[in-house]
Length: 546
Image (tube, helix red, strand yellow):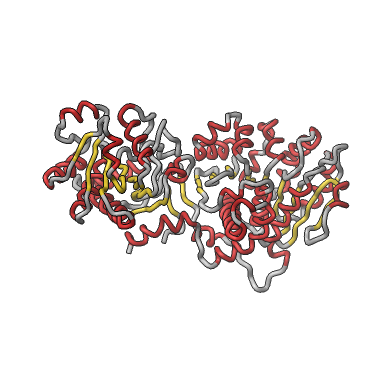
């Protein structure tokens, strides 16, 4: 099994297929379509057995439709009742004339001709499309493949909406029709699939919302393409194999100094819990020693425990003051990594502290640092003051609203293309970016992107980000470079959330539950356990490779 699963953009997959067909000969395009269609037919057969009946394959006129024609042929040869309905821009006129099917590529046309010769029923979508679907037990969506870059309308919109209205189980070929394969954006309307069978490589739109919500279960089929080497952006799915390989070693002759010291600069009046969540999460992730530098008036309310408290000067609002810099600077000399931001507030003097600390103290120290929460908002007030020269040691962990402030664009723009905006932020700030949310995106300055498969809706709870900061901070302290600490940290964080949800149910999960589940998540990773998404993806892939 691959330790990383490469994710291909539309441009990358088309170039790879084109070069491979050119290398192998023009007939190889027909072979690729045959392999893809047969693999999809096997998936359809598995679902059909649960609810036997007529299978209706809805085909566009491109190569995705050609794949659908192959599916229909195999189902027919396996004695399964099958009907094909085609859709094009002139669907209504074609339905009246009942013409021969005209596909847009030679490979697709060949498969349409074979179906005609076999006597398989092929209709054109017309006004009675909804009625045509009523007798189906299962629908195969082969309308659009990858590369859709404009809103669907006309007969395509009516067909997609009709599939969704039918209430039937749907298998999508390569990607649900109407989903942008590079961003996951819905292009006016998109098919809601129960399963998507995709070919060669995963596509970003299958893993980024809202497209990910429409894909259903994912299966990845090896159709015989070569490795996708290099190219920008270099997008991968984080996998258990990759994450496990990054786990810091725990040598038998170690001591607490072996695993590094984390210094967390966190907390303000009413927000002490953020610092505690971050620091205790660092300990549970294996850091040898954890220090919490927090306003001195808060110390009396903090519980005794393993975290060492460092009282620092404060503002009149009990937040971190500028005079705290000397004490923090002295502690910085003995620490291995820094966490800056959880619960520090947006007090004006605290904002000044953040900028002065980043530009002077941290930049001079060369220590790796994770920056989160209010520290991000402080940076957003003066982005030009960010120490880009030290960015190779820094991880920023914004949620979409925080990134929108940093990049001065709307949240909607961020969410519409999360990968691109994470990469733009990594370039602008010259550091590793963790764009939080469902399917968190991690981006480096080198154009590397990882999409995380772990986690669940129960993690949308106050303090979950502080736990993530603590995990990544501990991994930085144990010697991982920022992109590796971020990638592994996000994977562990999501897996801990999955462990907690498995015990408590998603609704009842709070940040402290995620923190407490960190050791169990690491154990599960060490045992080779993987996310639900990975188990879906690699099940069919393993069959194809065997």
